[in-house]
Length: 318
Image 1 (cartoon, rainbow, N blue to C red):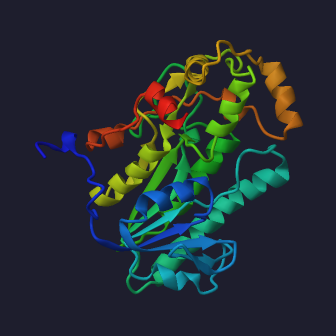
Image 2 (image 1 turned 90 degrees about the vertical axis):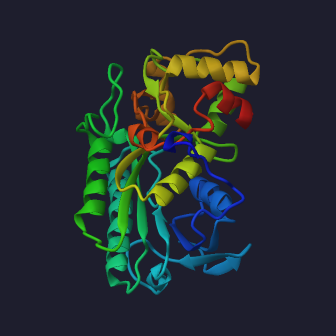
């Protein structure tokens, strides 16, 4: 390699010949993305799940409740990396009950994993904990990076702040800690892309609200590659795991229409969105908040996005 800027992964090589990867709450969309990516890069992958304990396709699944010890904590011994994806989906109405569960699911899982690491004789070398790009304020005027991004004050942002506070407040001297601030991960088999694609196919893929809000996104492959990069480069602290180019909602939907081959998309006004959100029991924040977030720490450390262009991303996914 001539320089770090030309850094790329060789999928035929095991990056560190690593022995063990632990993924907490790894049975969902992102968990499966990581399993597929890392399957040939670790000798052993262990998934902490609320489901039954079993071995399936050479992956070890261990039952846990994400808030107390029950034997699963022994699996953390000698792990190269621990990735925590636990947290109740925010795709729901923000009732008091749901808000309490959203917060507790993130705090409890992060807290018990911190405690488990402290009990290990040979703790995981790296603890990567989920966070969210929603930690930054609604922004149509300024790109939010890890250094100058402005963190706001509402329910979602306060959850994110509490989540990261819980993660960082426990010092783990033998374990590197990284919080990944993710936004929309676009993938073929899960996440936001599938419903967006269906809406567009039905002619409902126009702008949401005034369409000026930014969308921060990342292709599923780059999401997994970014996690691999963070592990290999031993990057600590909070890192935005998003593509380099946030795009306004109106332009995002136009590109999706073009990729699918639909000549039009009916716009959805804010009042209609609010009505629809009540009917399907979700919140308009998921589409109306402007997440104008950029991955400065990834790019300054030499990460090269394979799918930094949205047109290329849609072409690949469709």
